[in-house]
Length: 373
Image (cartoon, rainbow, N blue to C red; front, side):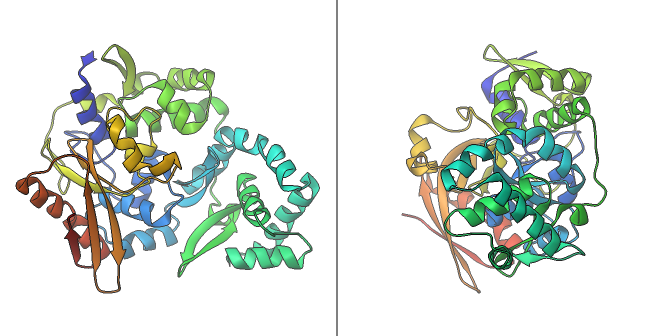
């Protein structure tokens, strides 16, 4: 089947759970959304909380936090050496299959830091013992525990050792205590680990990626997971008929065939093709692709990723295309949103942008005020 870029973008927004999915089913809770995606970028906690809220319009911020406390999902470094929110039962195999490159690169990083493998492994043992029995410690407590055990945590050493313990599958990031990040033992936080063989694991992550991001390419999949072309090809073979290939402007892409079926819109989701969404900076909408040209004009990339430093600004999206960025200033009683348009917006467009923050206000349970330049 041949699709235009506009058709592909419309379908992609549905895959991302940011627009109607027609007759296809959609997840209804945090566990379902995270499993749908397979992994959601989560290096910035506030961003991923709103990523979930934007796809679960009936939930508030306390609801999402409570779901994470119930262990519907957890945070760790499953791929590309970057924090993601993932299904707890899948943590071990994701670390083993997609985290192997990051773990292999730890040797070079240790050399740069002047850290030996023996000391790094000692740090993992110390943290494992300290957290045993259901323990949960803040980052500061973890570093203090390592220091007391004679392990140097100065400079970047502490972060590297916390990462290494999680990359090894010993610890994971538990929900914050107040504003402080906490760590727990992965086996205690996710005791019912799924242990598929490599083929099943590749088929699972391929299916989840293209189901939640498609239509898109093998190259995008490789960029998202850090896996090579051979693994991508094998995963697609395992997924089989669960995915469909289409051609978009002469390029092969894959998607969930259910997207191509008809049906009515899902409740609570933007239905019109020109819908405007206010998305967090690290949302899968942009982070999930290596090639973002379908969503972003080249001249706008600098505004979205200033200096190309990997820190993505929150975006305003209309019909799947970025039309602006936004920043928030929060107080206990109100959130103020500063709008930065990237295209010319008429008065009616501005009203629709203002309305796009109503779901965010409901999620935060705070009034939201927008400010325009």
